[in-house]
Structure formats: C-alpha cells, structure tokens
Length: 288
Ligand SMILES: [Zn+2]
Image 1 (cartoon, rainbow, N blue to C red):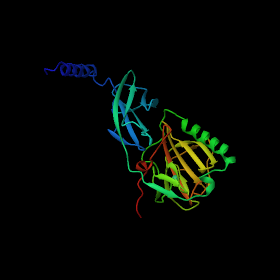
Image 2: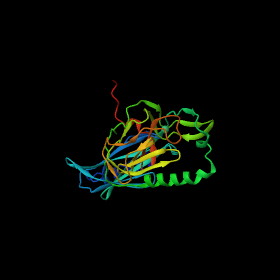
Image 3: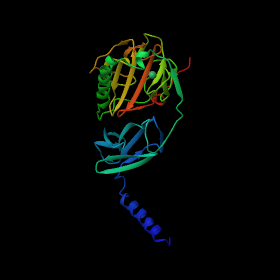
Image 4: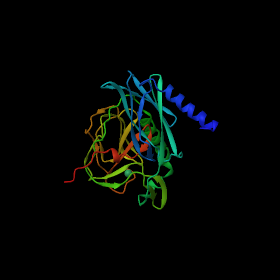
C-alpha cells in the first residue's frame, strides 16, 4: 500500500463499508449478474424494516411495487426485461425502499437468433395504402395497453401454458417475409388446431380485445407491475375490455386471423412495455 492512489481507494472502500453498515438499513437486492437481450428476469427486493413499497429504477424509469411481509422481512418481486435491442454491455438496476437504496450491475449478453423465412399474403408485407391509417391506429391501441402500470402484482410464475401444442416458432427469430427482412419475432408461436380454447397465463384485466391488421383478433391482459401477456390470431375473442380474468380462464379460441401462415397461437409477454421471451416462464408441459 505504498501507492497513494491505492491507499486512498482502500480507505474509501473501508469508509463505504462503514457507511452502509447500519444493520439492514439498505434494502437487499437479489438479481441475476447477467441477462440475455430479450430475456425477462425476476428481482427480489427485501428489507428488515417496514417498507410500504419498493421503487425499482430500470432503463431510466421508476416502477413502484407494493411490499408484502414475509416473516421478518418486507419484500417485493418484480419481473423486468432486457430489451432485445439493448445497446449497452451492462445496465444498472436500483431499488429504493424507504429512504435507503441498493444497486446492482447487470451484464448483457446475446443468444443466437436464427433467421426464419416465411411466405405470407402480399398485403401483409406491403400493406395497401388505405390500411396504413388503420395500422397506425392499431399501434396506438397496443401502445396504450402496454403503458398501463399498477403497483399491485396479480401474476405468479410459472405462467399457465395457454394451449398444449408444441412450439412452431421461437421468440427472437429474425424474420424475413416474402424475401424482405421484418425485424424480430416478438412472441412464441404454439401449434394448436383452430378453435382450441386459449387460457389466460395469470390473473389480470383485459386492456385490449380487438381485431388488428397484423395480429388479427387479439387480447391483451394486464397482470400488474408492468407485466402484460398478449394472445394473437384468434378465431374468436371471448372477453371484453375492462373485464377481470382468472388464471386459466378461457379468453378466446385459436385461429388464423391477421398475418399468419396457418392456425396457431402467438403468445407475447411484455415487461414494462418491453417485449421479452415468455418460454422460460411458462409451465412445463407433461409428456403424455
Ligand atoms: Zn408469432
């Protein structure tokens, strides 16, 4: 410790240790060290002192979560997302509980995202001019559904698997429609015959139930803390906007409406407006 800079750094470390020492004053933050672009991850905040709510700062925004008591601890669990298009190599997550806060640095990495080539009706690759206004209005409706935030959590993981069918298309595939690149596949496609009942992944409220140009008959459910699931291409919608649904309740029937190559369920998960992969959070299917 002859180097004065190192001595200073050592003293500062000691000082920081002393300052954060008051037992249990700062909340504890349990989060993964690294998360892949496009993945969701669970974060647990806890405090030995009574806290009404925790506020998580992620991607430049604050998300409040009501705390609940678990033994001697006050806790909150939130599901956050690492954007598929995240440019940074690491992100900082901060949680505040009462007057204290704690932070974690989360490294970002990439999964392999294969290319998938599909052929669909021309009108879905180069939409006719007269539907452009409708497509813009659809985007506004979806944006409104995704902007809803409540500090109460109604979801639990794993999520109910809405239909039993296998996977026909993974989340995050880079898609090429009729030879033209069209970004990532932001959902999970589950194989299922037309008319199959689709179950809600978790308790929630219907925030959008409408026919959209690309998505066909679509239902969006808000599950609290910014967690939203969406069910697309239905043949029939069986719920109405504003309606509360229970985990496992049927919200519609599998179909082939919108931009599709055949009947299937396109299932999407959003965390605070970010599209993320739902597959790791779904119930495992029993092989029969
Ligand atoms: Zn899909």
